[in-house]
Amino acid sequence: MAIVAGGGKKQYRKYGCSQHWYRGACSNNLLERQIWLEKTLLADLQAEILKPEAVEYTITQFGEQLKATLGKLSGELLKCENARRQLRVNYADDRNGSPHGTLDISDSGNK
Ligand SMILES: [Zn+2]
Image 1 (tube, helix red, strand yellow):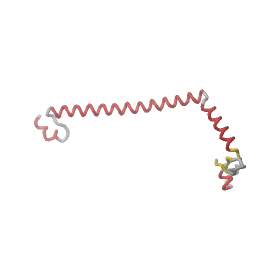
Image 2 (image 1 turned 30 degrees about the horizontal axis):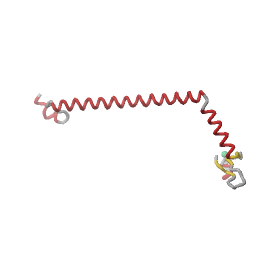
Image 3 (image 1 turned 30 degrees about the vertical axis):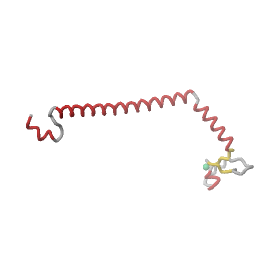
Image 4 (image 1 turned 135 degrees about the vertical axis):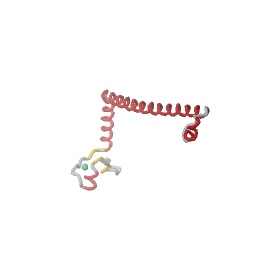
């Protein structure tokens, strides 16, 4: 849908099917005044959006997205916490003369 008529000072701008008016590829020759269409569309949209079931749906969807995101985040936090704990353990072990990683191989005979 596009503005396909009007644009001059005297004429109303009108919406129509661009495939019909510019290419003749569509049989839909409906024309509607831009002002009327936009006002009506906006009013209808507002009325639909503010219906209790629409508000309810939006809140439910938002809640589910939020739960999913929080679930992912706490999973990530847990991973970070575990990694941090592991780093601490490794660090403490290193300071106690029990190195990790490649050094374990060369030092393994000392234990
Ligand atoms: Zn069309």
